Image (tube, rainbow, N blue to C red):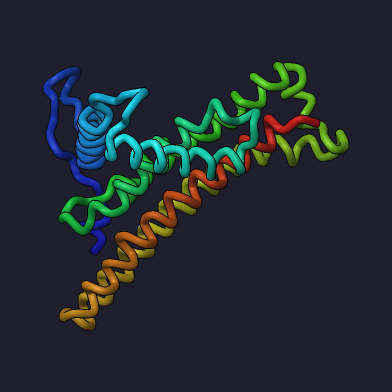
Amino acid sequence: MTEQLNCGTAFTIPLFGGLEISESVVVTWGIMAFWIIFSICITRNLRVHNPSKRQIILEACFLKIQGMFDEIVGKNGRRYIPYLMAVMLYIGTANILGIFGFKPPTKDLSVTIALAVMSIVLVEYSGIHKKGVKGWLKGFTEPVAIITPINIIELFIRPFSLCLRLFGNVIGAFVIMELIKAVVPIAVPVAASLYFDIFDGFIQAYVFVFLTSLYIREMVVDE
């Protein structure tokens, strides 16, 4: 099981002594390629007048998801919704790849760290964009100056908690699935896989972007 948790090297590029490309990176490229091709195909021949059923369904789904995020981040955070939607699609897709025999990139701690760091950088950027550098720095002294050290520490705790929450839940689901397969190898693993690989995978994607959305809202909300 320990070997299965480790993300091995997929291939090596003979540059600068050998650049190792991990399996999680290759799978991530595959996810990106899939969604790029899918997006190009599904958005072809869009029309303002007399839209097709495909376009109507696409617009309805997009508006539904956009509305969901809009309620969380508020009007001042709408410019960050595309990023939140992209991250949710990536994590959701990555988490269900186990069904198809691929190793989810979210089992790689470096991937979850990268996602968490990107999200927190965006959160802090949103605060600087809304309040300016002085206003952003002043936020560390609120509500009282004495808790400034705590607010600074929280700046580092947030990405740490996002990273470990996603990584821990994915690894936890993987370990439980392996135990179920070892104890009851017939029928039960299929039902458990539907829960852990699909339902729980999407839940983890939603939780990640939901928390990121809340952090953004805290930064951009009007005082």
